[in-house]
Length: 319
Image 1 (tube, rainbow, N blue to C red):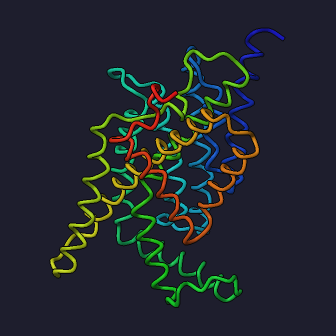
Image 2 (image 1 turned 45 degrees about the horizontal axis):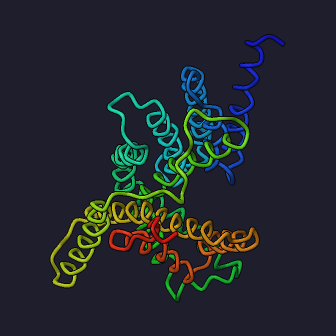
């Protein structure tokens, strides 16, 4: 096998795996990881080619059902596939950043705000909202009719659909940010196991934002409180304003939540915690995402991260 054949095989493996993950639907959120695992300096052209091919597959896979009339052009499926396309583009911009060098976190935030210019107007579109509520309503009715154990807190299917849609609008941008940042982190740590990297991935236990970032956390929360107060006073407030502020708040919580996890990992290393305790905590963290009510405990992480603005939990002098 010559060098060129070896390079082609190195490219085709991750490319095919990314496509398979995307087409699997259930694992589609991980479709960026194999392609990102392939990327490194010197492979920019191949990476751009792979990203372009993945976007084409997404567009073809999504376009065929629309042509056949199986799904609507403006609905939740289009939103999810469109978000994946934007994620492929966003990750490529972060990796191939052509502007002034800056910390990767800031690059991710910039591409997230860029993606928000497409995601939020799409979700605010009345046609999208109507078709999405119709899709959600059908799913909820099926769950209710099959007795899936969901009581929906005594709400009608229509009311519960509206709550879900409003939650989606308020969190979709932060989901995009988590998708881009999480894919890059997983891919680089995966490669770290098998080869020496040009640059080491930023460890979660050393992740920390500057103190001025606390305003990025506080101001959106104040904005939400102000909108709630205006609502109590019967002052009309555009719905899009609440959705934008909520997304900014969720982005801040995501950043500080990662910092909070870093503090915990730092102290697990400091006390030399065993693998069983670490496994238990990871399992508990994942489980909290899927336990209604208990998932409010996830707020511990961003609050812990924010509190490091005033309390230095990782002070070397304490060692």
